[in-house]
Length: 134
Image (cartoon, rainbow, N blue to C red; front, side, top):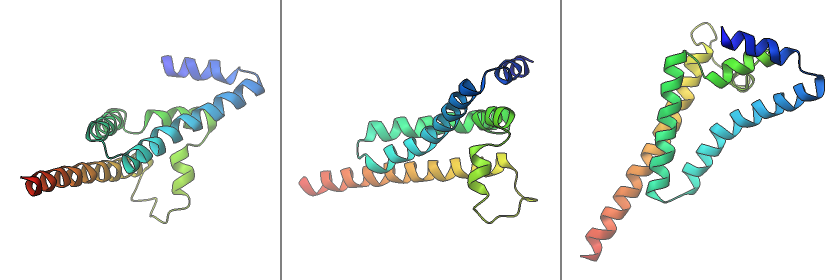
């Protein structure tokens, strides 16, 4: 019920504020995904990678609880579409077999696999370095 009341309040906002809210929603959603992936790909610090991996597990948990990304649900109700729908429009897949929630879970699982693989490779690197120096 609270979410519907919040969306009614958002629909009464003037156009300039709506534009700001729209840009903010899309920017937050984009930064949450691409920012995390950039940190994972560009860092070699193990604590940072573990923290990013835990962040992805938190996002995965929220997606499982809500059945879809909470940001996508807010974007869908307020904007009429979501960032996930926009990106998957360019990816060939069968929409009858996959819902937006399943597509989101696939992206999150791929992100978790990338971060976990990088953590394992860094641990192997440190292990081999330790082995070679002793």
